[in-house]
Image 1: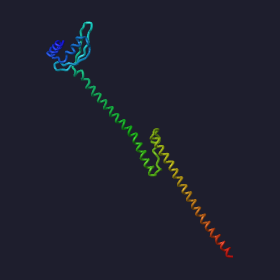
Image 2: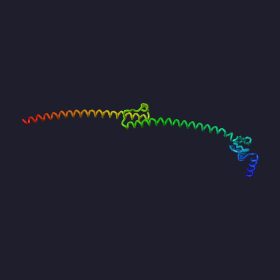
Image 3: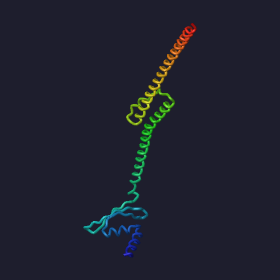
Image 4: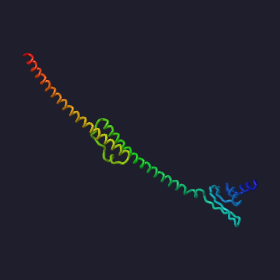
Length: 193
C-alpha cells in the first residue's frame, strides 16, 4: 500500500501533478470533498464526488487564483463599506458629542455668571424648552435667577423700609429729646419758684 501511494505520487509528479495523490485516493474510495494540488506550477482547487451507479468519481477543477479572484473584489468592497461605516460613525459621534457638549458648556458658563453674582441673565429659550436633563438644568438655573432676584429685591426693599424706620425713629428721638429738654426747663422753672 505504501509502495502503491509512492508509485502513484511518482507517476503524478512525472505528469506535472503535485499533491494530487491524496485526492486521487479519496476519489478511488468513493469519498466526496475538496482539495488543492499543483499542476505544472499552477495551484488548483478541486471538488469531487462519486457517481455510485457506475462506481466512478467526477472532479471539477479550477485555478486557485481564478477561484479566489472574486475575493479580492469582495475584500475591496468590504473595506470600502467598512470605511463608509467608520466615517458615518465618526460624523454621528461628532454630532451627538457636539449636541451634548455645547449645551453643557453654555450651562457651565451661565453657572459662572451666577457665581459672580449676576442674576439678571436668564438661560436661552432653546435650552429651557428641551425635554431632557439639560433642559431640566436650564430651567433650574432660571428658577435660581428668579428666586435669588426676588430675594435680593426683597432684601433691598426691606433695607429701604428699615432705613425709613430708622429715620422715623431718629426723627421721633429728636422730637422726644426736644420735649424732654422743654419739660426739663419747665421742671427747672417750677422748682426754682
